[in-house]
Length: 168
View 1 (cartoon, one colour):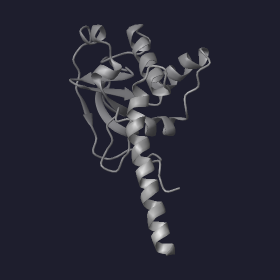
View 2 (cartoon, rainbow, N blue to C red):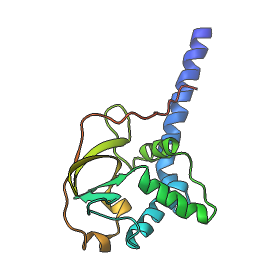
View 3 (tube, one colour):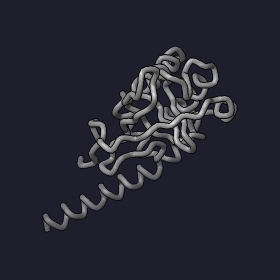
View 4 (cartoon, rainbow, N blue to C red):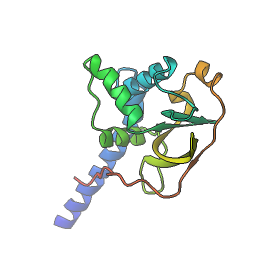
């Protein structure tokens, strides 16, 4: 009997987690959610030129339908802007996990959302940590049309970060 109850409890927990993950994407799409505010703020910083796009030393690199947002710098800039409006984002690892759960960033095969990219810098190729978003979620169209083309490459070696575990 105890084994059945334990199995049932485990199934209920998995169902609850799946339900939360499905709802998270809808919640993230709301402009007043923490994720929605982060995306809006990144777009504002890009539009104002405070965050550079596709130039050496930039915080965002766009190639086709993928935008690599350099972390933690770009998130810190958005966090500072939001803090001025008394909006507090969750800690980075939790925020990255929220973005992954909402399917707004690419994750590697083990679930890490922070990826290593290689991009041409002023003095050769540099390796950076980045979140990979769909371009349209982060970079306004008017900025895309004026940004120089650039190539970035996602490295195969995953970045080590904490991954949320749903075994509670």
